Length: 99
Image (cartoon, rainbow, N blue to C red):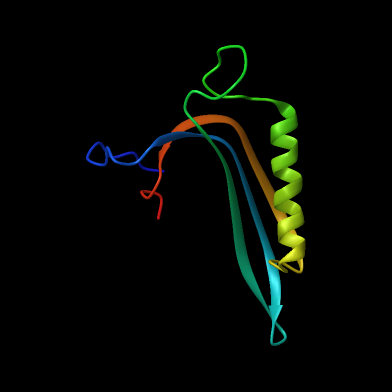
C-alpha cells in the first residue's frame, strides 16, 4: 500500500484488517492457482471511546465470514488452500492509489 503526498484530493483511511486466501480452481481439467484479497477499511475518526479506529473482534469476525461467503458464492476457488489473516493493521491507505 502506498501513500503519496501529492494526492491530497483523496481521503485517507485506515486499513484495519486484511484477509488473503490462496487456492486452486479447475479450468478445463487443469488447476490454476488463484489469490483473493479482502481489505476492511475505515475512515479516520471512526471508532468507539475516542479511538481513531475500532478494533472490535466482532467487526473482524464479520469481515472474515463475509469474505469466505463471497469466495464460496462467486466460485473463486474449488477450495481455499491457505488463508492468511492480518488484523490490528492500522496502516494508512489513500483511495485510488492502491491500483
